[in-house]
Image (cartoon, rainbow, N blue to C red; front, top):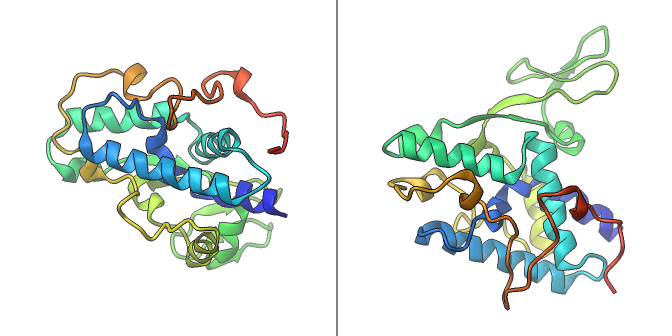
Amino acid sequence: MISGIFSTLLGICSGWFLYIFIDPSVNNKAILKKRNKQISLLQKLDKWNTYYNYNQLVQIVYDGIVKRYGITPAQVLDMIYKKATAISGIAGLEDLNIEVLLDDEEIKQLPTYQDSAGNIYDSNTNQLIKDSSGNMIRQNKNFWHDLGSIVEWLVKILKLLGLNLSDKSMQPAPADWSYYTENKSEANIAGSLPIVVGGVILYYLFSTAGKKSGKSKK
């Protein structure tokens, strides 16, 4: 039961933990402050649950970002970085469009309608979100708005698990990247491996060697 809760919820809200993949040597206080808060929340969940260890929680976040956005955390960060260095001011940064794959539980919360062929559409946007074969359809969304669109039921459940996603002080936001002038490439904007307190290096998240075998926490 607990494994299903963690996998589903962390997968849906994985973007909120994007900054754990930031290189800790990046010279940006706003970003690093949020990075530390995101790591602290994952550590809190690690202590709270008895099924997953911290490394596995990070892997769930990593896999969730890949599933939801179709690209790795490093690639998401590279997109944001390039936008930040190419456009001055926050307004341009807020315009970051990216394809999003909704979770089935999220679709259940949307106002939808179904055509005669069995395709399901979002009533608000008239976008196809699930075809007649049950395949999810990627939605073109604003990345920042997607981070803030966690549905109310999910926020309530996460609060019960000690994770408050209504706290904007940890949420990635365009303002974090305003006036970002440091000359860094994708390779060092995103650290190859996140680091926790004590300098312990986590799983090989950027290679196939990092895939979990499903082993429970001892």
